[in-house]
Amino acid sequence: MVNRELVEIIEKFAGSGWDLIDAVSNKWLADNSSEEIKDELLVAVEQADKDCGSCGCDYDVLYKRALELLRVA
Image (cartoon, rainbow, N blue to C red; front, side, top):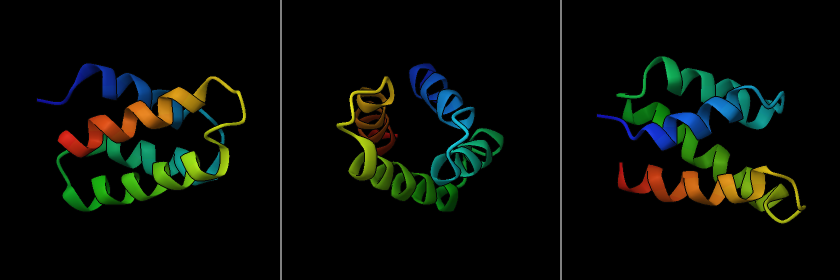
């Protein structure tokens, strides 16, 4: 079973309009059982956190939390 908190975070990413994370977030929401898509999402969220994880926006905390949850999922 997928963590509800993680789903909610990924739904926010899917609606972000940022090419880096929105498409892969939608792919993961459609098939969160795929390890390949999970790995792709991890890479995208890691890059988003690196690029924008300290800019002061609402997503900063979400990147870090999503990474924590994805790594234990």
